[in-house]
Image (cartoon, rainbow, N blue to C red; front, side, top):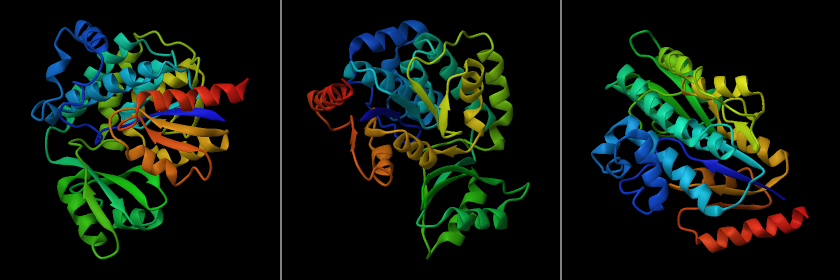
Length: 301
């Protein structure tokens, strides 16, 4: 049985999420950023895309360190790719903090208001794409952003465009506005991604020591330059999380652990994992998680 550590994307954040983490990782992050990260997880602070993304990075890395386990695979949805790359040994935590800080600023500056993301639940992908085609225009831009499950997809675009799609969905499915204030994973963020890529060119990356699954390609990446491209541009590419989890399962993963915060990815993984164990760090006892990982290690021997 192989293991996968899964790292959540925006929408999983909640006020106070950093306060339960070990002081050492908070101090480390604060030193790198030159500010106290303990102020980033207040309800007011989390209105900022930069604060949200930094909180998710810090929480993911802290949770993985607490497990004291080397998984077989790591994967992250959107910003979750950054803690995944850190735990894979490809990206230094300090570099990740600086890059994520810039990433959040670039995304927020590009679309400070009037845009976001909406989950469409209960409709097949083909139906969602048909609805998007009916609404999308230069004045009402809206795109497919995430493929999360067979009947759960996420769209991104202007508030007006998303409202129009939601109106078409009514009676056949559910449209749920997400706690994301930017239109991620579509071409609207191409220019911010290009600006981030310029900064990425100055950063040293290493070949992953743990299998890194790209959530936009739904397959492993080992080449350093492909990884650099994946991290820099994932903000403007469609996330295929359903395909990523399926890819892990087909490669023998039978233990899926979602890192803090939240348990959304756990619910999505249960739709794919016909066998094995799917569990969220959040709400579980640390010793229970460690026992599961020890069982897996014994099976490998």
